[in-house]
Image (cartoon, rainbow, N blue to C red; front, side, top):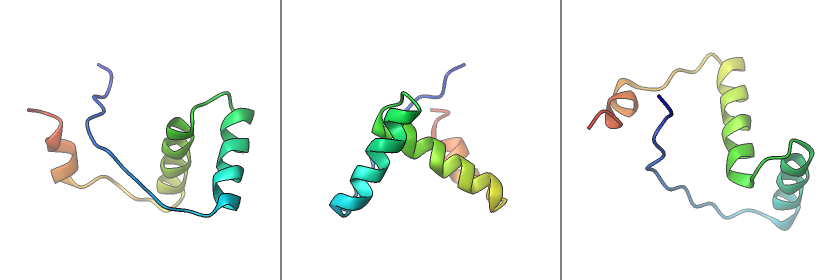
Length: 61
């Protein structure tokens, strides 16, 4: 079953970071949002991070 996306994230960043993100997304043929998800998931794997139980249960309603 696909994950339901029901959370919003808004960030402020520099033009340089936004440009680098755009370049990375274009290289991977992804949207900016999708690229951010990939980067966070990759970092989480490297850092051995796991979602909290609360965040995993939030989508069950």
